Length: 325
Image (cartoon, helix red, strand yellow):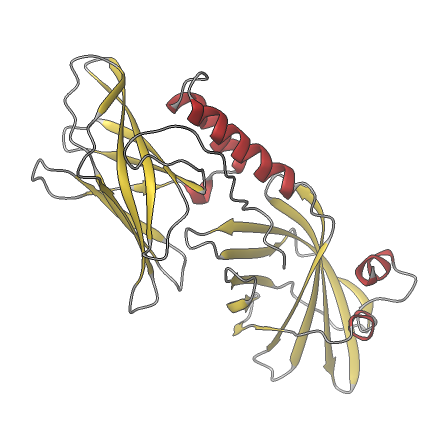
């Protein structure tokens, strides 16, 4: 699968300290302190070097005493692979940074340290905020996983003014991300697994239409039962989420329970798939599940595209013809 939803955008401008010069990725978080004040944050991060460090610019927006405040500081962002396989991301204020008041008055603010961890098994992201006040770390809400690229683009106006160079950097970054995503027509995946019944199943997954970050998908399943080849088809919705380590989390869920028999007459419950591709677009691991069971997935290596496609489609099918181009 091609890396669809993430493009590093490089554009330099004159800046001080370790402020992010490029938009390589962004993070959005929320947290609430012990007094009940709610904070919204954005981290704009440059590409990580060989030492795992990247320059990052952080802005925090909050309301106190009925006044809205917006502050900025610079941080070093570290990416670290843990022994348990999880990824740890740390945003640590630089030694030379000062809190810059972008909006508001009478503001006293300690630069935040943000640390969160990505679970390799569930992709769940948990983290905390802390500062020099000595208070216990506060849990953060990581928002990227529930935000589309358009949602993130819409947030720019909350954190940056149009005259600022970073505003144009972010707008271009999100425009290019969405433009690249809209060119997806079509792409293909091939997955295999053994069911609880001992039968070997193969799935040929074709995503043929792009709608925001959700892909309209056609899934065909091929399997042999009682000496007969069966092929079924159903419609699904695919979602691709980019993790902070640049891997892809792919989720495919049936749109409904309707399954069409292409060959054979067996009844079939539509499958859901969840799998991870690494930064080189190689399959890492995944799970198949249906109403009755769950199984580990494997990625099918296709040496002969024509031979493989003919297992699922005839030569007259449009999908078959596009696949061979």
